Length: 377
Image (cartoon, rainbow, N blue to C red; front, side, top):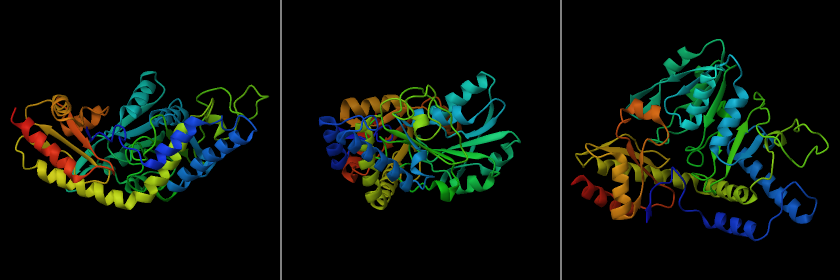
């Protein structure tokens, strides 16, 4: 199968990740729970991963790097931890349901209020309307939430411009699920207070790996309660990070995959950015030759190209590509309904082709031939 669904989950893992996971599965101990050599070795690798993430994303210290099982868990810890009774938040219409659903729940239970900032179409694609966002800030606005890259069409918001438009007191949370690993994200340099990451996409790690990074301006209470290997005599959770947010046994195989994935992503970052920009540019140019297809992306380093068909539903096209041509793409709403509403594609959805560093131009040519066949239906 030609795998072009990397924005959902990276299909090909580099050899270093596979080797690390195989070693962890053959023999590993519980990191931080015992004093024997193997446990200490595992604990050292866990700390190496914290350090690698902190350095890669210009974080606020390795102790403020918390491991989660995915980006959704990291977002929930942050959103429910930061927003208190009476607070106001602003999110963009680009956001994933991992953000929209927690906000909707907190509004429904009368805990918070929030507004959704629209996007505008520019010569460079789609951008957050920063002027409107700035006007949405209220005296009780606690948090602004912005994705680093749209999982629908690969649009990349200008985080620096957004941060500059906000009062200093307002916290900025960025969802790095799609942006992480595809282009530099610098927390301190940009003024990002919270960054959430999915290991299994642009960072080449396993499913079940994620991380939450946050600044000293953010105080997050425990989200789960249980064993941490520290302060075991106390019935309260530890009052220091990362232990306060890491109850229970960590997934050591997932963490070592993330360690090697981050290292690999850093080593190929410039090459990967250039390649994915070139491949998405090529695919967009070729799709414009087909009269029944309409594109909604511009060339981007995330490897995402979204398009629709004049008559066929996106899910139908993805099903045909899978069943008749052995090509994996994703069709539908991609868990981001407000973005589709903004693009005018809420009814039919979009076909999303998402590439990785391992995809080649020849695979796109096969896809284009298949889409030509689909267009004739």
